[in-house]
Amino acid sequence: MGDAEAAFERLLERLRATAAIVSGPLGGRTDRERAEGFRHITRVLSIATEMLVEKGDPAQPAFTRWMTAYRKMYGDNPGTVYDAAIISPERTYRIAGNRGTCAYLGFCLYATTPQGGKRIVGNLDDDELDIGADGSFELWLGKSKPAGAGDFLALDDETTEVMVRQYFVDPEQETQATYTIETVPPAGPPAPLTEAQIAARLDALGAYVHDTVEAETTLSALSASITTAVFRAGKEYVDAHGAPTDPPLDASVVVRVMPTPAIQYSGSWFDDLGDDEVLVVEGVAPTCRYWSVQLLTRFMESGDWLHAPVFLSGKDIAVGADGRFHIDIAHRDPGRGNWIDTTGLPSGNVAVRALKATGTLDVQFRREKN
Image (cartoon, rainbow, N blue to C red):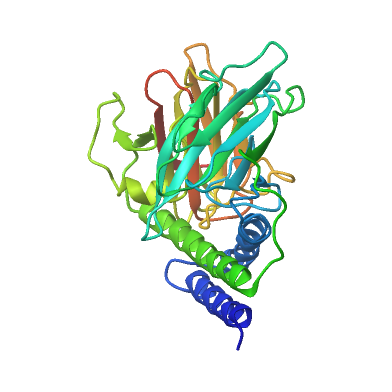
């Protein structure tokens, strides 16, 4: 058996192990959840095949558009564009493009530990970028800053990915940023693919799909058992007053799904929401550049936002004169204004995020009869 064939067999083994997660104690509880879980495997496989197999050579970097209405993972937000590229600390990279008019543009570096965990290496966003009058910018990545380079993020020995995020308050009016990534100096055309190379990429693909689904279902299971807290700066939990508090779960579990330090996150898991019940989300509208409330499935996918109101951004949320908001999450619209449709899911996670927020998220969750 050749290297590639053996690696392909290992890939099938990892996919079978991933399927066992979907069918196991951390996986789907209902027919629908199991169906969506197996579809989720194919979605992660689609993302990872493009990123790790087709674009997995750090000498030939290229961005992969992670999320669409049909490719979802890691708690995707419908109001965000996510682009990721595989990179290596052995090389220097230049990202160049145009800022556009999106509400936020940020670049985050992630490391992969020998144990498969994730770690934030660095982050730089449009508050720090040197942007030309025409919207142009460039950002350098490397172990050391090249002579004459402007904006720069340092890579450490475990850096494996750069993620670009664009947030949109009004997607119909805002223009997406555009950008490319290249090695400096150029690596030249790639050599013909070898069995050893494709074998390594297939091994990486199998590990990525398995570890992603495992991390997502583990985080969902842990979320079901914890008290509400706010996660900020990609590293710490704080209470309602912004004071550091004991983490309800290990922050490394959260970082495994690659958050950004520019966002504060809060949320609440719900189980067995009845037809006559409402999950109420209320609090103070944050002072921030962007915020949203959405549902996530057990596999950390956003809901079907093409066909149902499963997501509200700050632009859509009615806020009272006192600055407070009230959102109903229910199987049918209670008729009280802001409503998120469960689309029939009895269990899931309510995710609240605030980008570049002043102060600490002030959000509460409760259940009541509809």
